Structure formats: C-alpha cells, structure tokens
Image 1 (cartoon, rainbow, N blue to C red):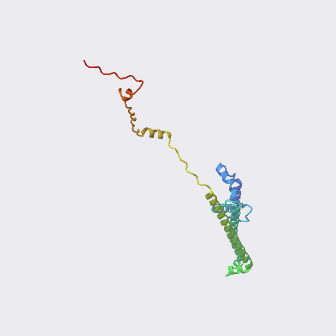
Image 2 (cartoon, one colour; image 1 turned 60 degrees about the vertical axis):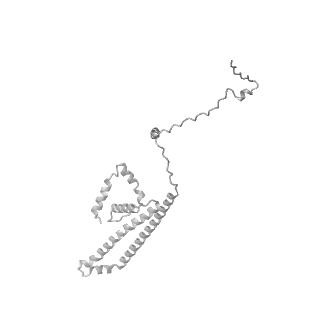
Image 3 (cartoon, helix red, strand yellow; image 1 turned 90 degrees about the horizontal axis):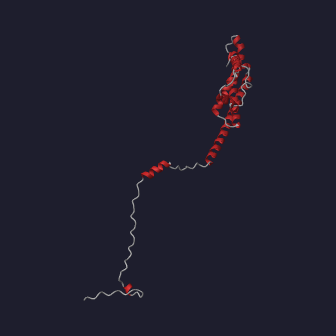
Length: 224
C-alpha cells in the first residue's frame, strides 16, 4: 500500500504532466475512454492511489478486450470488484490492528483472540461483503463470456454468408505471346491440287463428219 508521501508525490507529478505530445500518443490517449468507464479519481478513498486503479483497469481491459458498450459495462464491474477485493483485504488488516492495540499495550498473551472478541459482528459483515463482491464479479464474467460468444458467432455467420471471391484469369503478356508465335514451327506447305485434264477434241472425228454445217473433208490425192 502506498504511503501518504508517495500518494502526494504521485499527485504532484500528475499535475506537472502535459499529456502525450506525439501523434501516436494522442491517438492512443483519445481511445482510453473506450477501454473503461471507471473514473480513477472518484473511485478511491483515503490511502488509495488512483494510478494503481488506472493500471488495474488497463490490465483487465487489455486481457478481456471489450468491443461493445455492453461488454465494456461488464468489464467495468469486474474492475470494480477486483479493486473492492483489495480494499476488503486492507480493511480486514486495519480491523485486526485496531482491536489488538489494547491487548498488545498491556502485554496480553492472547492479543488475536481478544481482538476478535471485541468485534465479531464487524468481521461477519466484512465476510458477507467479500462474498457478495465475489458473486458479482463471477456473474459479470459469465455475462461477458455470453456477450462475446454471441458476437463471435454473429461475425462467423456474416463471414460465411459472404460469397467467396472468384479467381480471375490472367492473360499472358503481349511480348510473351509474340515470342511464342515467332518461335513456333511453320506449318508444312501443301501442294496445290493439279487441274483436271480436259480431253482434246480430235481434229477429224465423227462429230466433224456428221456436222451438217461443216466442210467435207478433203479426199487424199490420187497417185499417178
């Protein structure tokens, strides 16, 4: 537990601070209110350090990672219960010290038993507060797990409902196509088909002899 001098020194150092100066630090600082809604200054009592409560809130927020307002509310309850548990431990120690001052002052051989006999009702009340605080913390954790499980299931359903991207066909570069065409073997040359021969018309044929408009063939000369 921090002493009064340490608490006062921390308070003075906090007043001298000018806050984050870099763009990254300012962006991170602007998101602090989304991590937890606990006010570290108003949630402490005498003898407690607000810096320790803020550090506790940062650790629990980084561990549980709330993503919605409902989740953050449950995380705030968990932080508050954790801080209360630490307070009850310190409270019990102070009760023991206050009840044992008298027997220790007169050198009583049983200071612990005598101190407990002075305020048994106070210890019983403290025990009930500890039990209630623990139940509240467990209930908040269970509710946080339920909220996060529902959120994860909804995100998985949305991801499964989205159509899968179709692969796109990529065309080969023009240079590669040209090189392939140049390197490809030339097809074999095919010979042109030979023209069909037309039959020659005989000079002296039956068509000529029977042609009514034609000129009769000359007779062969007679021999002398």
